[in-house]
Length: 102
Image (tube, rainbow, N blue to C red; front, side):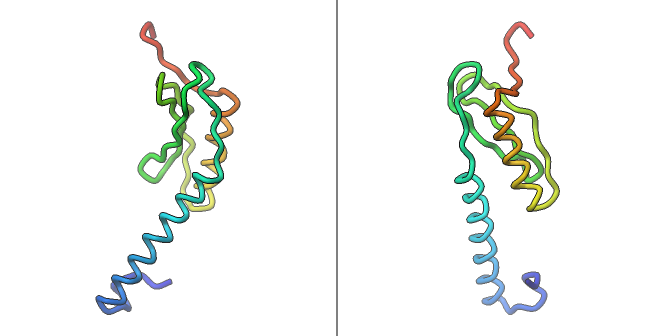
């Protein structure tokens, strides 16, 4: 597809941007629908899949703060693989937890 602003008038550009943003949101929702996270291996709390500013994924427990390491990506293809990897790490219990004494 062509970049907005280079070959479009203002109305066409607006429609293109709306389509592009909607498509990006659909892609993001598809990833969340594919992932099944288990409970936290430490406390049994819910895990939250987080994307950090468009470069990595991690999973964090909403109750105790335990989390996986960050799995980075550089392309859309790597993005989905990183998501699956970080979910797998969470589900097998490979998480980091910092207690008060540490």
